[in-house]
Length: 367
Ligand SMILES: Cc1cc2nc3c(=O)[nH]c(=O)nc-3n(C[C@H](O)[C@H](O)[C@H](O)COP(=O)(O)OP(=O)(O)OC[C@H]3O[C@@H](n4cnc5c(N)ncnc54)[C@H](O)[C@@H]3O)c2cc1C
Image (cartoon, rainbow, N blue to C red; front, top):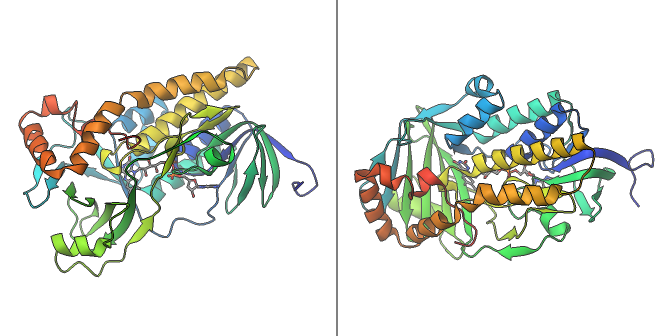
């Protein structure tokens, strides 16, 4: 048995696997409630690429609830005045960022993540970067290349295709339409608009980072044999020199987000289409739900029913997305119908906000 330095297994109230937005928020909330918290992250340095995020306005409520609004808005960010969509060769159609006037913040993922990680460490969470996890059993004993650890609650916050879900034998389901994500950054002049472009093989997102720079992402259907440079050059000739970094497609998801006091939060439980701008909100909100339940359970002194209560609240959070998911995946599959839908939405934004993926969120799973 691998032991921890002095030969003993180290014990914590909570161990979090993965230091993304979900894991870091969860760790900061539970550490602030005086639980002993360990965060294990496989990477030892910041990611080697930049990823710009549009945050759903729902995040603003979460920052306010957690009294983090002022700190969040002090981070470097841009605010979007406009979102536009174009399908195939049709001209783009513009929308205000949100029909009810709420703002959409655009921020670098490492900036957001670094801030949340610092908060977790300041609240007392231990942070172990660059650690490889080898196995975990149903009793939450974790074997790593830094020794063996045990916790009352284990949290899988390790993103898409979760290692925790696989190793802890969660029932897994296949994602029906996997897409490979590609990221790039360019000197294309930025503006205060984000733009999404749809085509037969997938879609593009353009995220302004400054007046002179734009981050790009492209989601290509997994069976697409062309490289992103081809589509870039088709739509924006002269930009085929950009280098692109690929992320593995999400191919499985766990059929349940909790088992034996092992909770999955963020993308580890469910992934959403990047175009929704809801991924970070759902990661943060599921982390908040899990943290509140763990703190409450700890205070009561018993760990019974934690799984059931988390599963219930998690289903409530994600459940409302499934119908919209089907609609949105239909538009991604049939861009011409998307054109008609967006034209309709531009004319009747109040009705469309209930259905259009960007405003309402769409779930990738099972689409
Ligand atoms: C191209 C693209 C664009 C996107 N754009 C947006 C957007 O504009 N707005 C939005 O809201 N959402 C967007 N999303 C979705 C969003 O990025 C995710 O929903 C969000 O990052 C999920 O957060 P998380 O903390 O659950 O997981 P992640 O951010 O994936 O973090 C998981 C962490 O766990 C670590 N890890 C993984 N495996 C292990 C292991 N075995 N052991 C230890 N650590 C491990 C990883 O290194 C990582 O640090 C986008 C996604 C993609 C792919």
